[in-house]
Length: 318
Ligand code: KG4
Ligand code: ZN
Image (cartoon, protein in one colour):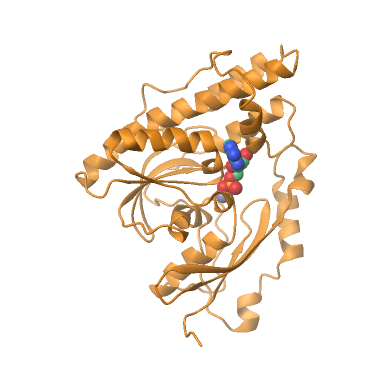
């Protein structure tokens, strides 16, 4: 029997309660033994977004959080964002350092991942996250929460050139991002939407604008990453819920081909919140003997780059 440890990952940071088991195989590759997600979508749907108090209650109903203590097993605290950051390593061999674009419902950041626990933030959103922009646009179009994946479907049927939408801070602020102005523009247009065709056209125009913003800002991030790393190891990793968007994947793969970077994404089913990525981050920490006390506090604003400035609402000044 294998002596390799089995890691139980528990994910409960937002609106999914998930558990997974991971063990390294004899080739040193992570193997997912089990990966289960219990979604809270039905609980939050009627509010059009995640209600933190309801989320916390639903997690406690599903998971007894004193598991490690009662089983006398070592405990490892994992930053949810670190789970996303390392998730592409579940199916690809990636060497450090790599450039990471983390695009989820709560975060949008470019980071230089120098090693386990070593993150240098190159850019961040100064207002909304990319996934939040997808969800808010969906809500304005009358699509149920979480709307991001539905926008992608509607966009396929629409004309992406119909509405000219703003691309905030596209020519300034380095690789920092901003999506709030885009939402305001959508709000204005959505009020005058008459039929299904308009709706599809707006979804398509929004989708295309997001692609263009991420293409341009990633290109800037490539330059910054190259400057730091002297052009060594040009790997671009995209993770988080929005990385499941196929058109965004395509445009970023195109950029990587143009700029001689290797593009790596997690499998579609591991882009959104899941416990396999948490178990994997736990496994990496286990191998470095990074354990925590059971009274480790929950950190709602646990930054990956702890030296990066944190300003409420806006990530940085530009
Ligand atoms: O990583 P994630 O599951 O949760 C957070 O950590 O926030 O990301 C969820 C976000 C939501 O905003 C959701 O609408 C968005 O990812 N998302 C997508 C797609 N699938 C999920 N956005 C655009 N296109 C998709 N296919
Ligand atoms: Zn997440």
